[in-house]
Length: 224
Ligand code: GLN
Image (tube, rainbow, N blue to C red; front, side):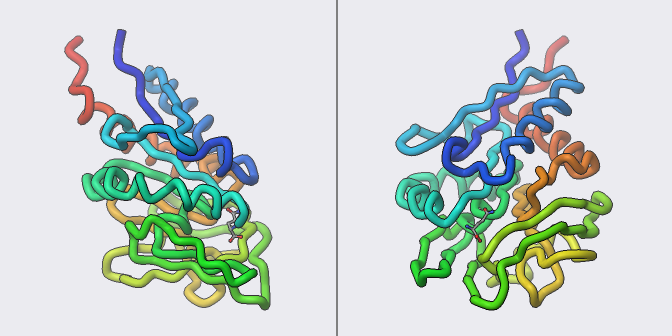
């Protein structure tokens, strides 16, 4: 039996707003089309986790309250996830999960939720507008259509290291100032796009391809 592709879903039970689990279902479909079985582990509060055992890591969106709960458990993942990301293994983080890859998220009630601090970005609340609605942005994979619903505004602290995932056509994306959506660093993607984002087959197929490569690097090429 071929080894299945292994996906770690960080805090599946807590970080799943607006159907972000659909991203994992869609990847399961595209990977199935390539003949791969897929195992998804819910890596939640207290679950042991070694990122190197996985071919893909997914981190969905969440409300501020869930983010505060998750942020308390999260620091133990810092080293294993930083190594995984630096090694160029694929990861997708949506909205609340995207925010938690950065240094911090300062919420509407003034609380500062500490993030993993792996990527040079931070997120702040500003009272004038919650960013809600349909979004459309242009990426290297083509146009992506989704929707957003967040109060946090994300800014890059190192624009040489992080690249936007796309240029806004409609909606806010990272924040109302920069005109860009999401982030790419090596093969780690961050985005505010729910919908789920991977209903856009162009980007879903590109990520599925990265996952297959990551899987083959981990388990070795098939012999027959
Ligand atoms: N709670 C965060 C915010 O409002 C993230 C929201 C989300 O994940 N949809 O900015």
